Image 1 (cartoon, rainbow, N blue to C red):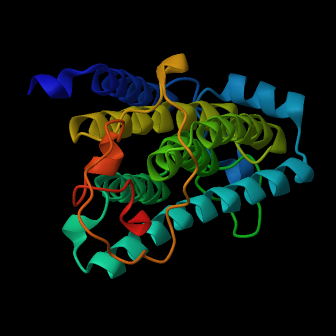
Image 2 (image 1 turned 30 degrees about the vertical axis):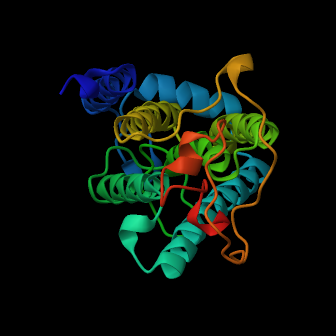
Length: 268
């Protein structure tokens, strides 16, 4: 039980509590009919001020939609790795635990999206193609933060390449920043929709990191203490079997964890 009280889980609980409290406040504080077709919106004065200040910009709406598609493609790529591992090993138990945890995480994110589509907190400040739509929390914000914040670590655990990990991390930071700012500037969300999306996705990411730690996933490189690994793409045809080889002394946890050798089953 003590392992569940580690830093990631504690922070996850704090961010989730903040999200729940913020959501409840939206339903009771300054609720006025300022939305399209008379829809009532919490924090009406604040949301109305920010919306009128920034206006609506179609370019940023299209840009953020493209980033959302990019995030879904990244998630699909990791899903494909898991499928290929399963097809190669013919056993779900032999699929890398990091991939399985990531898959469960994606399902939780999807369930959160469905929940807030059914239990509407706020509606969009504008009418798009399908009439009034639920807008809290910003689903694009949640999607991109959850996928892009977890992608670099998954890339590192599959490739063992520090340079690729660093490049992916910075690229994902930029994508997250553009999504958060662009979604607000686009004018298709209230200010509180974006804040709610940040709070919820932060909670989910902390829980994901805690689950990775709890189930013994390989730690990510920490500053200058990490040893740079030679890049090895994890998806390739299996090499011919040879005689028994002893594991090298500097072999990482990810290379030892399944069947004794190799970071990903697809790299064996």
